[in-house]
Amino acid sequence: MTTTLGFAVLGLLAKKRQTGYEISRAMQRPVGYFWRAGHSQIYPQLAALEAAGLARSTVIAGPGPRETKRYAITPAGKTALTTWLGGPVPGEDHKDELMLRVWSLWLLPADDARELVRTVRDEQLAALEAYAFEEQDFLLSAADLTDPAVPEFGELATLRYGTLRRRATVEWCDWLLSRLSQSGTVTT
Amino acid sequence: MTTTLGFAVLGLLAKKRQTGYEISRAMQRPVGYFWRAGHSQIYPQLAALEAAGLARSTVIAGPGPRETKRYAITPAGKTALTTWLGGPVPGEDHKDELMLRVWSLWLLPADDARELVRTVRDEQLAALEAYAFEEQDFLLSAADLTDPAVPEFGELATLRYGTLRRRATVEWCDWLLSRLSQSGTVTT
DNA sequence: GAATACATGTAATCCGTTACATGATTCT
DNA sequence: AGAATCATGTAACGGATTACATGTATTC
Image 1 (cartoon, each protein chain N blue to C red):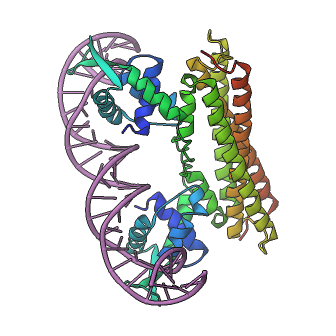
Image 2: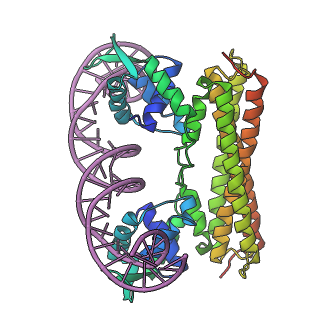
Image 3: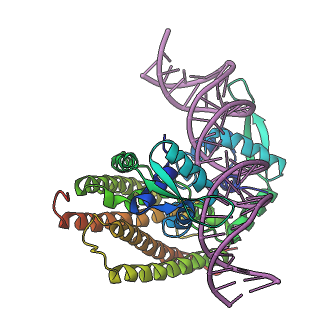
């Protein structure tokens, strides 16, 4: 049975054939925004996908003590991927360390709490700026972004998701800061 | 060294003394929105907190084959918790299976993609409705919600966070649906 | 009488992170 | 000459989920 990581890898192979190294790099940055994995997970996963007939590898020229393998998705792999895509929608992940802290924020002096929230706000704004640049790159690219059947469409959709959610987080920071400022500087 | 789960438990004990059972129930619902844990994690964690001197237990009357223990946070536990709260802000968790699917959404026929997004939208709206009710309960409660030093303040802040982020998600769904509708019913 | 809630623990397994290990090529 | 990048693997460890295990009290 294929794991979520397996579908993440298949999703990358569906775009183009790649080596394990290239996939592990993609799992750090573009895909890494919502699903990270180190190379120590990737290589065994690729072997498992090949064993299940969902991917296939060919040895190509390359450096180093081991063979360089390039992987491609098989028709069975594409079927497995689209079946998973159309399957039941997963529940949201409930691991948010920031909210865990906010839950106990009442214990922190208002000054420290404000600093915490301001830090979060700054990080969100920095991420939003980076997203804006990436979105610019998309608009300048050759792809027809009105066609939902091109790979770039999926990437753009994840970018917009990140943008809208981070904007909401900034809004929340502002709300919280105004609440924390209403009371005096020290609550004693 | 105390883990994140340890601080989650301390955060609950800071509000009031509780049994392991009560804590594991809290980790399913109120806290479970952003940090879930089963009872098999809670009981060993409570033992570890007691061994570290951050919590202390007293045996109380109760049913079953084993003793019923009620835990309370110690002064050292409160110090550890506030120190953690004031420490460096953690990076966001990058595990979002929905975005992993959206990344590969271009492979799915537009009809199926629309159904997926509509399902997500419906779930978000349902959650928003539930949040609205919970927020009503807060406003009707006796607590002074303008004071950031009462436990209810932290709970309210997490609720607003969930509300604002889910609203942004609905907005994103609408954007995506409009994009998916522009192209024909079947993309062939 | 049956089901559910109360109450606490251990064991097996899985997934993910960090560290170990090796070596060629390219850039500074 | 040294650092960074390319390239692929294994091992140890820790955290989380699921299943195993036991027994009382209350509600339907």
